[in-house]
Length: 383
Image (cartoon, rainbow, N blue to C red; front, top):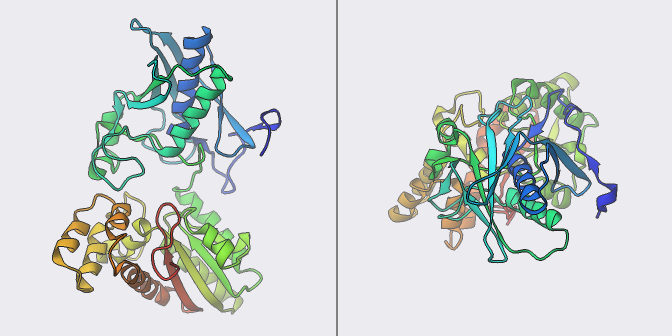
């Protein structure tokens, strides 16, 4: 592990590999607000900038602080402006704030202030009844508390995280459909926004695919996100350059692979497509069209398509209805976890997806899809 003395600041001025600007997640902004509020609450310091420790122990992020003030009830509020870089982010420019109070209970509690939602349905990374603050941002905020305390006894703090106009912003997201009410979610797995959802990112995906195919390997893998990457490297023994993160651009990525293979008059033995069914099962929707772009603005959520597969396979109508009414596909993973036919169910979805993709890449001998839960657990044939 990298010692604190050897950590480096993460430079947002350095462009991502696709030439676009990175940004700060809502989780990083909320953590910065928490740290600035704690510095005033415990030390009387007014910070204009704070260091936020990232999940990658090699780096920290310097985050500007807009305002810090002590409130009449003894709590402290700090404001941080969200910066999304070149990613088309609904929260870009929003004010994320933290209101921090000593609770004298010896533990940190995460609360939703105005503009941050509450979770009301199962299937998310946070249980119902909790503030919509994801696990990694919670870990980052806990780290900020520990850093400010610097070994002193922890009296306990309530961290109320909010967003100015957050309820209005949330209407432009999937939150209402996910059962998150009252505002936005505080998100992030790395603390850094990677500009993955822009059209310009597609050009860099084509480059990565051509590099992956450059030495005519027996196999390469596509992953919409990070889920499945460990399977690609550890189980399939693929090199790092043979695993291409394709974001939402499934159709375009298949077309890029076919074009590159045609130009070199080569064939590919196996194209692995690895990811979460919440993304990939969207392709089963007949209304997807030819674009096969799984971005939330261009595709329906996958619960209906997954429920249709359950009906085709003869699952009980009650279970099929439960799947249809789930608020997320991860919720379906939980619903199916103890079902005797769960592995066969997910394997059938994998086969259907592979059959859909195969005609798009005739120079690939075999398309193989493997699905994983959010925690990386294999669901179908890889289980």
